[in-house]
Length: 595
Image (cartoon, rainbow, N blue to C red; front, side):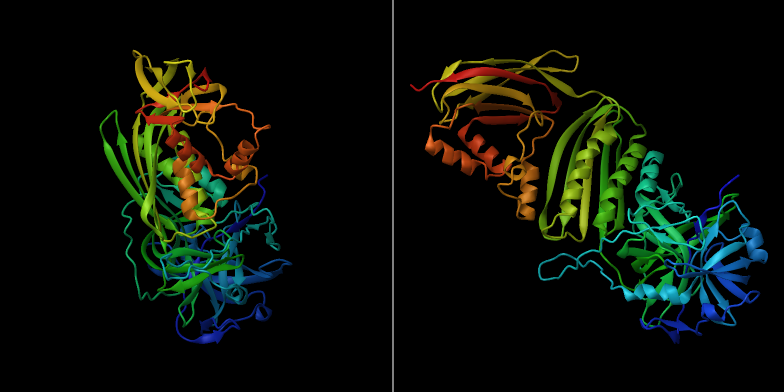
């Protein structure tokens, strides 16, 4: 026996002109009807779009009012009927937000229903509770340029759950349970990425193959919308797309709107673009019918994402993130350029964007498997006047795409969520050269020209490298012993990133990173996988040398980039970049003896 679950149906509606006003100043044209005035059997009418952009209506009958100890505090049980409902197979996912009127007065909007049931039954969120979202302040990020103030983005994270229609519970762990709200519609990435995005957002994703397209969705600067129009909340658009389509509920005379009659992601104060939507069709389903829609033009910003509704401002727009991918398939010679934009919400998008890029690479490369790749990541925007970039080499014997984008995920997270300065607008541009061939080189042997050197003395290091299944090649480095070294020292030749020194000064609490420029500097100092590294490590004891102990204490307060630069200047550290992923580590010993 199938268990019935509470279904969140996506919907939203706009209302213009003057009417009943709430304490928040939100005005509903024609007035409202409170739930206390509702009785069983009252007839009403709901408005929505089921094809194209034409608003249609269908009759509804009030059956009961269900109380709740949570938000919303009550839900109105209704039954829909008429030709529109017969055609769609019942109330469809995507009708949430459809306004319901009785005698010309707005009672609320359809927001919930049940799966695997009679789809004519639904739940309406009262308009008085929907308007309560304006009791919270908006927080829209501004462009981060000198002289302009940037507001802190909201980071609240609550979700709707429940299989009992009389209870809507806010879960403390931020995860949805039994949430059957309208699915997100996405395109441009692989099915495995769609599954991960479902897990991140707690919402099902319907993947439409090959449907992504032009990233330049037009903007309407003075939009006029009507109750019942189809609208989409945009997460991403362009060659990668992700959007939730619903119905507009009401518009106040100050340009604020209400929609959906339930949360989108339940994240509180947000800044998601709102767009008009074109409805292609309502797809019948035994589970729940659902709409398939496409955004057509951006008309405003969703600023509130609360348990009882979403709302925002028409004709006002927030910064967005710009993502581009230039992919070269070395084996075929094919070069592909893709670009998309996302909502400016770093706390959420730093989780979603890496999955979108991973899925985009899956599609562009046309395979998932082993290979080698060189990836260049460039970040720009805000106060990064010249931008910042990093190039690295990756190899995987099983899943190259996932492997090479792991560093991309860490870098984007750290930079976009840095505690010093928000970067808005935020641009991330990725260049990838990929091949199915293993571009790997192994450090096979190391020979030193001298075994005994004076402090500060130089010696040659002959490194034998063997590319994968090819003849070995020899490369030479010249290193110097540290001037304060004495006795036995270790010469280490290794691939970049292998046994790389850590940020000891930070890990041990001697200091911290103090600015965005320092943060980027430490990222730049990290070794890359295509480097061949040679270094001299001293084992000199400092217990009986007061001056050495002081020098060591000061050294512990230095960042990794500072220590590395000093070693490069004294000659005890050298590296060069190859066109291979470098594997292996070899050690040799050398004695430092004063002349």
